[in-house]
Length: 413
Image (cartoon, rainbow, N blue to C red):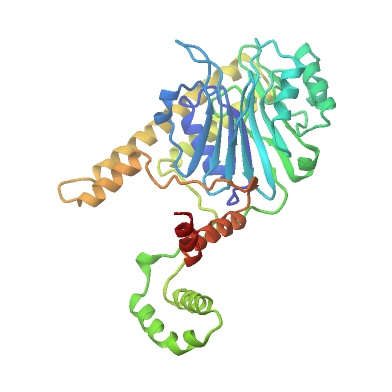
């Protein structure tokens, strides 16, 4: 799946604990964003959960000795984005992203022990720029989304949905498995503004991924986001050809006689560059994990097969088999990562150049290109599209470099 227009939501029951599973979900779905609940993170934990090529936003859990709760949103850095500042007692975080349209995604976790009231939810959505999607673990039961009974929390959430004219994507598929009772529940909800309801398809992942909640996949049905920006492959350029084309293509007389010499120069330069220098692909890049080998695939299939048995027949024997398969899968993945790591660092020896050594150190530390595309505030309005942001920056760069800017600056002095 090469498109990055998916959104994943998941109560991961500890981001550090299930980091490998999150990385595998990213590899499988190449998402625009992942909304996580019960991350159990402290600010000091962030160095343990780097996400290369993604930008992370966190609302930290509570507790001193044992952290509980916490929510995160992890967004592909090539997508235009900006964090939304929220004033809420709830465990929430929101980010505005540009997909086929600018949308607000909000990751939310409502603990079972929380004394929730309707006003807190109403105040939250009043702060979210429309259209928006709420994704998270609401811990409420109601027949509206497939529960066999209605509890107080579920009735409150249903009232919140009705009162705010919102839509719910859930199709009555269970999203939570209680291993103690071998029962399935519907705790994770995806709620949106009406204008987005037809733009996405909702489904539950077929594996618990070492949590007690299933990941939920929200697929965009609309146009794909803007293609990945192309870059010149300067290291693979044919410079002799580039020089020869420049000599033959540029004419000082033509530039002097042109009404807009800069436009002519730019057009010729782009044409010459296109013949001598290759560009990167527009297809979103997949970030496959080098440690994910055949043993990992087999172990995950066995874990999935054991889970299917529980879903059909939740007996004690099937539960025991599932626990064994789950532990084996976790052990296999950890061993594969350890072996891959040992192979990676073993390539450094006395003959390795210092540049290669430092390149590897930067990769190990996750210090690759982490620059993200941010929404831009200009004259009281927000630019959310990549062309709009680029044009605004280009206009300002051009003006600041022009003689008009220099004259204005001189007059102010």
